[in-house]
Length: 280
Ligand SMILES: NC(=O)c1ccc[n+]([C@@H]2O[C@H](COP(=O)([O-])OP(=O)(O)OC[C@H]3O[C@@H](n4cnc5c(N)ncnc54)[C@H](OP(=O)(O)O)[C@@H]3O)[C@@H](O)[C@H]2O)c1
Image (cartoon, rainbow, N blue to C red; front, top):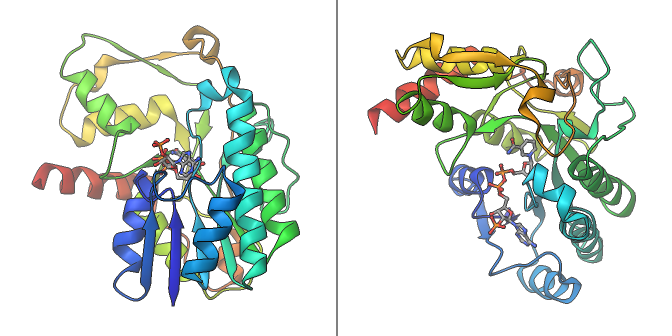
C-alpha cells in the first residue's frame, strides 16, 4: 500500500517510517515538505502522491506553548487536520489521526474508555479534540489516542531524567498526574496492525499506569542510578502553564475487540528502551 506520514521528522513519525517501509511504499514528509497549515499545499501533495493511507502525526506538541500561542495550536492541530481530512475524502483514502490522552479532563479514577466524551482542560487538548472531530466527521477516519511518548529519536522524559541524574543533586517530579508511559516502537507496531482494521477510536498505550514521579524512579532504577534523587512535588508546586489531567490512563477495549493484544506493561517496555540505549 502507499502510505503518507505527516510530521515525518518527529519522534513517532521517524519510527513509523522505519517500521512501515518494510511492507509498504512510504512517503514520510517533514514540515518543510508538507506544511499542513496550507490547504493548497495539502491538496496538491495528497492529490499528487495518491496515498491509500495517511497517518496524520504532525502536530504542535509543546503543551505549555499552546497556551500562549492559541492561534497556532488551533491552526496546526485543528485546521491542519481539517485540511488533511478534506484531501483524504477527495481521493477516497483512509486517515489515521494520532491523538492524545489530554482530550480528557482527568477527573476519572478508572481508565478512560474510547467512547467517553472528551472534555479538554488545555488548549493543546482542545485543539487535538478538534482534529479528532474533523477526522471522524469528514472522511474515512480512525483516531488513535496515545500518551506520554518516549522513543529512541529526539528528546523525551526518560532521556531528560537520565541526563538530570548525572548533573543534579535533586530532581523534583510531579506525583499527582497519573498516566500511561508509552514506548514509541510498541505504539508504531500497533498502529501498523490497526491499518486494516475497522474505523473508530482506539487507545494505544503500554499497559498499567503510574505518576511521573513513579516513572522517574523506575527510570533511574533501570539505569542503576540513585533513585533517591527523585523528590515528589505537586502539579501546583511545579507550576506549568498548561493545566494537565490528574488521571489520564486509557483503557484498551477497542483494541481487544479487534483481536489485537494490548501492549506490554510500561515497566517491561522501559526495560527494553534502556537496554537498547545502553547498547548504542
Ligand atoms: N509526545 C507525547 O507524549 C504525545 C502524547 C500523546 C499524543 N501525542 C501525539 O502523537 C503525535 C506524535 O507526537 P511526537 O511526540 O512524535 O511529536 P513531535 O516529535 O513533536 O513530532 C511532531 C512533528 O510535527 C511537525 N509539525 C509541526 N507543525 C507542523 C506543520 N504545520 N506541518 C507539518 N508538520 C508539522 C513537527 O515539526 P517541528 O518540530 O519542526 O515543528 C514535528 O516534526 C502527535 O500528533 C501528538 O499530538 C504525543
